[in-house]
Amino acid sequence: RRKMACSRYEYVKTYEQDDTILPNVWIVIRIDGKKFHKFSKTHNFEKPNDENALNVMNAAATAVMQEFPDVVLAFGQSDEYSFVFRKETAAFKRRSAKLLTYVTSLFSTSYVMQWTKWMSVPLAYAPCFDGRVVLYPSNENLRDYLSWRQADVHVNNLYNTAFWKLVLESGFSNQKAEERLRDTLSADKNELLFQEFGLNYNNLPAMYRKGTILLRKRVISSGDNDEKGRKAIVPLHEDLISSHFWKSHTEILGKYVPGTYKASEAL
Ligand code: ATP
Ligand code: ATP
Ligand code: MG
Ligand code: MG
Ligand code: MG
Ligand code: MG
Ligand code: MG
Image 1 (cartoon, rainbow, N blue to C red):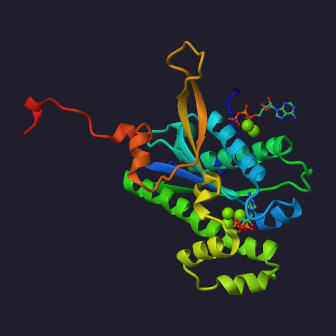
Image 2 (cartoon, rainbow, N blue to C red; image 1 turned 120 degrees about the horizontal axis):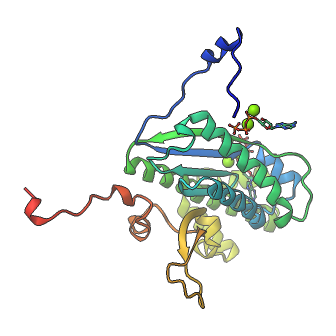
């Protein structure tokens, strides 16, 4: 590229602030849809969960992971997605604003490009997303972050499932449904769903209860003679709060599992 022309105006460049992210931390970027309460109404999302709207989110997040190979895991629910960059990433020299704005804008444009593939109503206006960067120094912090987001899916989905059953099937007004659910515990809402609507909450689709985890995997299809398989981004709807998840997908934190050593080297 051309060298920047020298001019007496060039000093203004020095007003730009360095925002290089410190080394050796998990970089999490979370995006969230602006006023999706309204956006979901305008576009007639099914309540409490519009499956296709979630598919648009997942497809947009997949596009982000395809563009940024250093994203090792993404987690999405409702109108939000979190992208986890590996600790050693050198993408954009770890410049915070570059990472954040590329991810947020690529997610937004991909969301729009994916829309017609899943949704039957046309987009009424351009959706937009906010974004933030959060740094986590330890694996435990990162796991707690993801557990926090997945626990949020559960709390919201249980409430919303009960709320919309009362509104759509029992004819409650929004306000009456809210009053009915005020101060109820999880167990009360499970009980209400089972007793009054014959619904076993645990039988709802896992995507609604657990959100979506995107991981990179080698996929071996039947009839495929390449035993390494092809690399793909795979959606999972597993519980990531329990340690079972992390034992089944060791590649995520893998680099930080202590290496093996010879017995003779041990103290
Ligand atoms: P970076 O990702 O670092 O920004 P870049 O290729 O986008 O890399 P810029 O310095 O932003 O580099 O320059 C944008 C380039 O896009 C211009 O050099 C030019 O080649 C091209 N470009 C942008 N707008 C136009 C336009 N309207 N007509 C023709 N070329 C354009
Ligand atoms: P803000 O701009 O502060 O984020 P918001 O209206 O987007 O405001 P959120 O807390 O982000 O508030 O909640 C997103 C809302 O979008 C949910 O409460 C829900 O009403 C709606 N929503 C998002 N995705 C879906 C979906 N797949 N199906 C049904 N509703 C959805
Ligand atoms: Mg430019
Ligand atoms: Mg918000
Ligand atoms: Mg939102
Ligand atoms: Mg949200
Ligand atoms: Mg440019």
